[in-house]
Length: 137
Image 1 (spheres, rainbow, N blue to C red):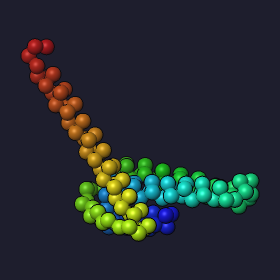
Image 2 (image 1 turned 45 degrees about the horizontal axis):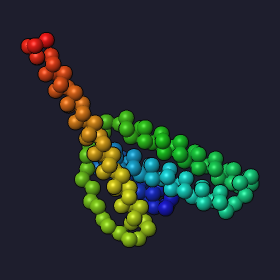
Image 3 (image 1 turned 135 degrees about the horizontal axis):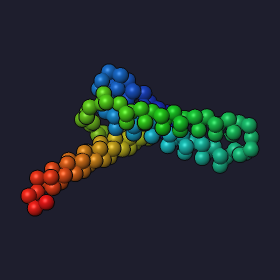
Image 4 (image 1 turned 90 degrees about the horizontal axis):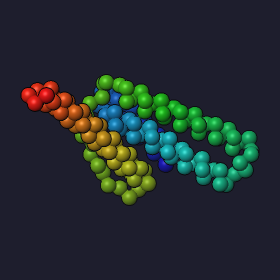
């Protein structure tokens, strides 16, 4: 799962460099890497001695991955170069295809949330303008 999510993140980053990716895809991919890494760490904790040096180093590496993914999400959210890109959803029963499908669904959710926020801002602007122009005031 970590490898598939990382591959998706690499694809999103390459597309972003070429100007063909959406902010949402990059964010969803970064979050998928962090989430799948956390799942891997949890599985390792169950099987390994939690006080071993190896386990502590693995946990430290996982924390660095989480921080890096969070930084990437913040950077992508602050970038103005992203434009909406239509994403084709492919249904797959394979593990890597399922992860990709999940990332694409997360991307769509993030896009819809951004559109919702923009709609709320438009509504607030309309209401402010209406109250400003109201002769009853």
